[in-house]
Length: 407
Image (tube, rainbow, N blue to C red; front, side, top):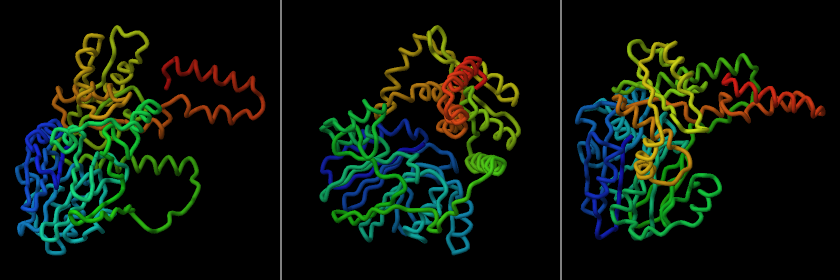
């Protein structure tokens, strides 16, 4: 991941503190661009595609008519690069950032439906005094902003906005607190800080500084999708092909890809597909808990998966002392409160210690592949429409199945 920041209209801006706040997102490089009009762009880089200095950001066109800061990865950058080259564009680097730069110059706002990837991006056109922000369809990459007619600030993290002096009051958003207490996270568009919002996923926004924003949703295709019911065999095959394509296109960077490996179906499928596509060493890591009553530990299953696939596997054992020592760092890193994520924080630390920079995770796939107990309840309840005794019997059998660690 990378970190980006932009601001306009703030008489006292602490760019040094903002860069420092974003450093954990981008330890490989950092850069700054200041327009005479007062717009500032900052970037910290984690190099994944093109590790050379040619990927430095903020990145500008040779005629200085366009600047960009970008966090994310564009999976179809090679196809877009070839199309742009056919239209006369020449490239200095192999980075996807330069593809975005020329792509926006060529297609303008029509660029967004063409992108396959995850991104938060800001374009600045000095001659027109126009700024454009955009964020991927699912909001994988964070982008927060504060705006009014006289000033603007945006960043990858609350910490950068706070450190820069753009949002120094730090008044808590009561609706955000209520959302956290209800759901365990802060629901968009709110953030923990009053006046700062989440830029909407799947949208682009553009404005001339000091004028009204134009905010629009973008779609991959305007064509209606056919509403067809698939049989089990066809649905299974389409899922297999989608997983195969996802692993292939997300392994295009110049860094080796590792794995966060649990004992679940989701990360196991990813590991098997990555091994099918790649030879050589594939590193994986899992986190287990020691001396913590009630904690779920799937590291034995993860180890069996790693052994079967020939992965270079590391198990990190966490006890009470390690939890206590890691918790303050977790709270500092998470930026906004969440009841989830501590496991991810621990496994990420372990992966980084092992030398990983890019790692696959099964996060979010349990809903698709039946990793939770409640995924099976509709099947159990659907079998018996009236006989309550049979329902209870099936639930009891299901509970024994879970206890046996079959799932």
